[in-house]
Image (cartoon, rainbow, N blue to C red; front, side, top):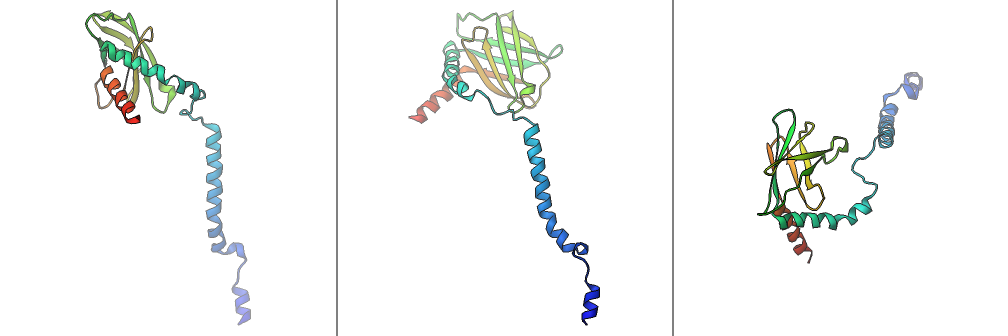
Length: 183
C-alpha cells in the first residue's frame, strides 16, 4: 500500500494547488508595480503648486463678483456661425459704459490641456465676437472685462445647453446665502 502511494505522489510544482495559492499574491505584486508606474509617469492636473496664494485671492474674486452684481451685468454666450465663433451679448444697468474687450476663460474641470482663453472684441451695442476651438462636455466659464474689475462665472454643459446665460445677481445671492449660513 505504501508502494502505491509513493508512486502516485508528484513533485509539488506539478500539483495545481500551490500555483493557485501563489496566483493571488502574484496578481497583487503586478497591480502594485503598475500603480507605482502610473503614479510616477502621469501628472495630477488637479493639484496646484500655489494653492496657498490661490486661497488668499478668494476675497478678491468675490469682490469682482459683487461688483458685477452692483452694475447689474449679465451676459448670454452663443457658439456657432462662421467657423467656431463665440458671441457674447452683454447687458447692464442704464448708463453702464461697456468695455472694448472681454476675456472669456473656458476651463475643463479635470484636464487643463483643453482650457481656452479667448479675447472677445466689441462689435457695438453690447455684442462681442471671438474665435474658439470646438469644445463639448462640461466646462467652467468665466467672463471678465479687460480691466478685471468685474466677472461673471458659470458652468456650461455644451451637449445640453445651446447657449449659456451668466448673471451676477445669482452669484451674489449664492454668496450672501453662504455668508448667512456661516453666522
